[in-house]
Length: 189
Ligand SMILES: [Fe+2]
Ligand SMILES: [Fe+2]
Image (tube, rainbow, N blue to C red; front, side):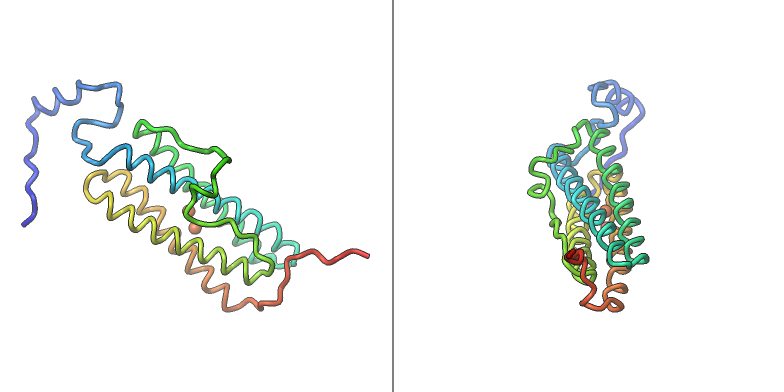
């Protein structure tokens, strides 16, 4: 049986809105655990930032092995992860929190890892692993949020859809790339 939430009358809505006005968009009707949501969003932010850096590194290294199309793909993903980081930071501030951009402990806060990868194939594989980690953690976050914070949920759902596209593109790339394309610069004489 679904739980019925009674609709508030206008008088109650107006009175509630005047209380705790310093909390901005966070009203009395906000039913999620705000501290917990902020923590989870900051973990997701750390994950996105690590992904920005890993894709950036891979972009420049792939360029070095003359793989322009893969390098371009890595750059696009890096930029999209940066956009996700910005969306999360913005939502954290709306919820009255502070986004954690501290480089110290970034990889520990992140779900995904920073793996450099020696070959083009290993870079693609590491990125695919990271995307799959992000997909699972965002899906769990969406389920956790449920109906208690629809705006955060919508934000995370938008990000999740892009991570699924990323994973799909990487899976396509993986089948086309030989394992021998090394990223290590050739030793100079
Ligand atoms: Fe992302
Ligand atoms: Fe992604």
